[in-house]
Length: 615
Image (tube, rainbow, N blue to C red; front, side):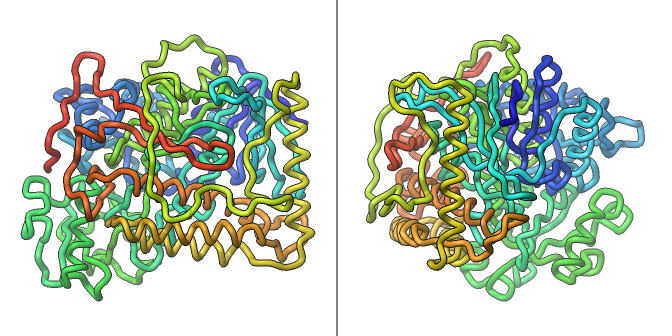
């Protein structure tokens, strides 16, 4: 068994920043990741980092834009923390050597992004995430922080008190992809989950293959609630054939969207009369699909994004990466012709419930980055707000886990504050299905109720449970393979829980997920080897996809209003009188329990009164 003060799961931007912060506080910290750090999905982030750096801008304006962009579902203490801390953290990256793009006077360049009232997005060409990842990895190496890469974390070792708020996380269990060994990692102070996104729930996504929602699902089964899972962001400019992202920076620099008739539809059809292509992502995504659905799409699938008028010199200076992506994946040179684009799954606004210090309701368990929901994005994330989230909340989680005294959080976690129970009309039974002795979609590891078990013993017990699960999978000689189950779930989610949602389709998705859960009870692994067994790895990931898909759909069915990225055919208005609250799901004896907690709109110096959101 390995042992460290702080263990960070995941080596993307949030994980690296958390590890550096914990090390700054003197902790013995290690990262456990199924990918090498510089292969993490943060490297795919193209756009930039929002930070109020210049005269005429302020963190208060940034916070207002964030609250408005969230459709008033973000919690003000989290949004204000993001906007106050972002400038300092951004400049720290510059001091660490990050190669930001610069103006002629030497200042870090900033450009407009959708939904911003000031051009406050800093960037490094169209490769901001790549630059950020390498900059922080250098700091990791400089500090000698231990990295266990190609280790897939499969379980959390959490005590089993009845109330999640009384439980403690003592460590993790991980599968060594290189050798097939299952080992325990004990964390003396805390575990920080920084496992990134969950885009593989859908079949058209900008997310990497590795983004299967592992951290969210593990924390959920261990007792930490999932928050606002129905809010999935669909990015309006992805390449149709692959889902590869075309940065919002193209529209920020002046790129124009056209339909089949050559109309600049954002203005022609009144989708965003003021900001046009620079409206927020939910607005632009719906506009594009409306054009396609009304017969003005190109090949009944996509629209065109044109940046030729910007000129080759400017495009190569600021967006060179986009030229290569379009040429390589679509065969279109955007210097000569417009690019085909359509909406694709891009980001999860919801995730593991945390406070603004990254702490969950389980003692010793933290989360940061896309897998977490400190409730900073609410119903819709603004472009350029994901990377500051990584560095701001990664740092805070790292400091807190390492024992630094932090200001008391204003956001409560778990059922400690005001809350109400909810109900949803599901057509099928939810949660585990047909679980028997051979079940592999089990819950978090727990000790016997009331027993006195040391942290190390609890981790070891979790290791033994996981070894048994993996042996069961490898010994089974027939059944159904995970690839078939995964394809069914992904296609159903894209068909039924996409940009446009209606009750009958959401219920169809729940039926499909139920069938997939039952099929998963007979899943088997064809490859019996112990070395780089990607079949086994993806089978283990599949149980996370099932829980995540059900949570997204369940939340979407429960929220009968239209807010941010969540569009409902039957409910075409935002209903503040009923729905200024977060959708929460807890894993209760193998079944999802639905409950709600109120949104916090009271900030440091003002209350963010909900208004009609227009651009």
